[in-house]
Image (cartoon, rainbow, N blue to C red; front, side, top):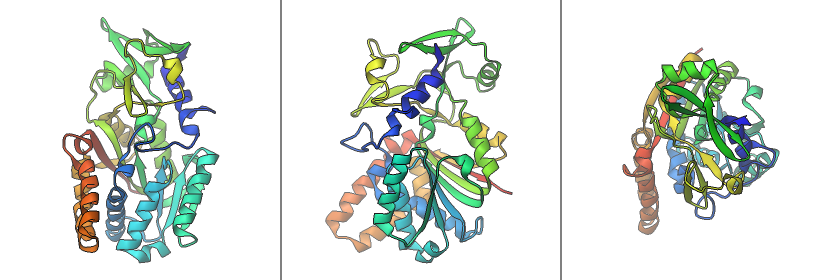
Length: 336
């Protein structure tokens, strides 16, 4: 019997885990992301990066880091829009992807070389522990929903923790004092508790002296106090506790995820000495970053059919009843 967090970790990141191989994203895959919806998602992040550099927060020779890069498409979109909006920055910036899997590093490197040749300075790190930078702007899209988490349930005022044996989840009285304290502090009575947020925030703060960290994910500011953990397989959603769900059949062959509790995430960064300067919906965040301005540039430089197609893609990102509200953006800053 193992804690659910270990089972979750093996499901996604084991030797033959779901993320250990190259996954298709979009209609042919198991899920969509904002990156697959529109290149202007990366464009708006590029615009934010340029503004952060121009404000003097980080120097023009800073490093742009992406964590959880999947195919490398988001990094490529960011680079392309930096070139479009402020091309001289490509002479001074260094681009980095943190990727644990060797085969994915190869795919990402190949894609970026095909896209930009030797016109950018690019390198890989296997983990955050290898990163040692004076300054950086860090980007992550949908990584925290894939961090190992514990399952928590309060049964008649007794806090219980989820364990797994033979792909069957059971709950036992929680004996872990850290889990007990965190649940009490954050008023979590039922749902997911990703303890792995804590070392991530601490490592980021230790390895990079000054940074801005931009992250997008789905979730809410406060705990839902319900289970959100679910499985995506070919665009079908299976709640973790759905009746007759065969976890053995889905294990490592599909994506498993949960809603991010942003108040807990923000507290983890605060404890690591990192300030949260923006937390808002994806709609507000992308508008703040300048996605409408980019769409206007697109309008002036493309034919009507192409513009309308891109406008519809942007609408998908911003719709209040869809991704625009369901997804949130959080921006953190660490100052030396």
